[in-house]
Amino acid sequence: MVGDSDDCADKREFDPETTTPTRAVVEVIADLEDVDTLELPPLYSTMNDLLDEFASNPPASRADVEITFTYEGYRITVYQTGLVEVD
Image (cartoon, rainbow, N blue to C red; front, side):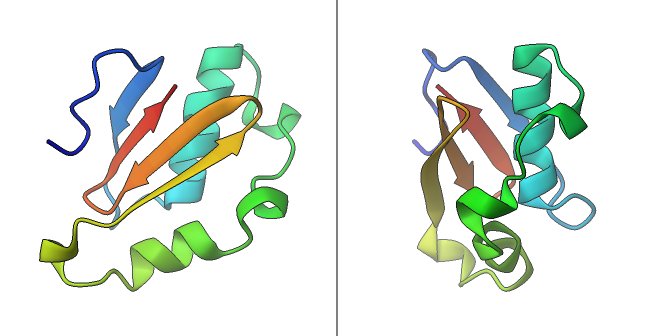
């Protein structure tokens, strides 16, 4: 099942209609590192506009798209459904 990993460091849902995936990822990492979001390097330099484009123009819901990448030493998976998992 998508997003069913119990061994991740954090798992959070976000509303793709009101929050960009980029913002959701940065907020999760800031919370895990106990720093302000502005103290983290820009996610833009890691992912360019890929995450936000992914959320604003998602493929058909049956595609179950996910993007996995590394940021600040964490393995992050963002699901089209609005879930962020951090390992």
